[in-house]
Length: 466
Ligand SMILES: Nc1nc2c(ncn2[C@@H]2O[C@H](COP(=O)(O)OP(=O)(O)OP(=O)(O)O)[C@@H](O)[C@H]2O)c(=O)[nH]1
Ligand SMILES: [Mg+2]
Image (cartoon, rainbow, N blue to C red; front, side, top):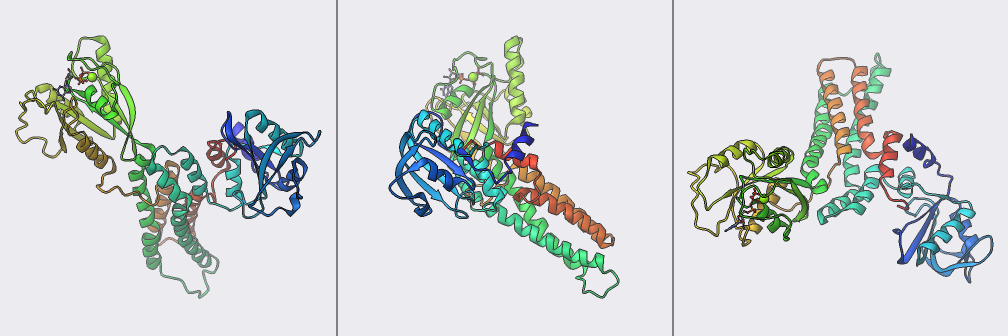
């Protein structure tokens, strides 16, 4: 319910909204930001300087004092800038006040604007206005959020590209073809008897395949590939007890996070930490050595380890190269078979006693010493390749999010249905229904047909003042 309320209120573009745009707490500079029709009038009431606000140029800084509009008392010495419509972030008249970054100062400035008729902004409302005023499509608005929340350079790069509109443009291109086809179908529906020139269905079928289905499919591929760049990957370290799993975790983390002892069965719980491998956030889970055990606590740990294996994008299967391959190792292999596995031959600083007899050649193998650090770089490269499924560090131009993926899949199946309808020789009115469905689905991505609840949800994830 509250989401709906926020949504409705936040759609009123007549309001002038205000928020403190800098993070809470004291700082060198604090920014109060306004957007809406009253921006300039409010500046006239609360800002004192040598020149009249009405003479201020857009996008220029001016020095003066903010005063309380009721008492005339000075609140702070500031710089302000007016951004006149339509050349502002929101597309509306906007005002930014750069004050000293004290929480009380900012609160008093905020209150001064409220006294002049502004209202407090909802989270993300500035960006929502930019979207509603046509300054950006929905994918670009979402990119702003990704930009702010990015943890790695790769995430930042993807968000930056999305902010420039690459993803939106691809989707708009697909929509354009569908709209054209729909218009064509309408003519065929409205004037069935007349001799309007109708493009043969087979021609349209080809165009739909090339201009709609193919690009949707490549966007879906980019989703799979880019998911890890955006959301990170999960990697589980498994192996029988005492092979050096916790030592490896510590080595990758570059800190003594997990307890390491020569006693088999040291690790009992799952230990999770995130590292950054060449720009990808990778959550590593060190697990209890997989074995049958009578120890109740260890048994729970072994169960949890299995769960982690099931969730993992990559599994590091660690074996001890200074020992012969055992039946226990073999059993663990059966548990991880079918996953994306890297075989890690640990303790390679000791004389090798392992003989794999040419088995597991299909798995990437890396020799390391968790104790001394040999082979770790090579292992990181291998992990990166497993996760991205490719060698070069190439950041795709667009990475659809889960929300986009759902809409793309809906659109794809509607278009496929349309093609079947064409093939079955059904009248245009039936094809038109499928095409409309595809249009609705794709429109959700760029924000043309996105339901209000979804919009509210997206913008509610932003911070106040963005
Ligand atoms: N020589 C040598 N010893 C190692 C290496 N890696 C780990 N060890 C030793 O092997 C023993 C077990 O290491 P851990 O990291 O606790 O092994 P684990 O697989 O986590 O063991 P559990 O938690 O019991 O399943 C410790 O004595 C480590 O010092 C290595 O690369 N070389
Ligand atoms: Mg351990």
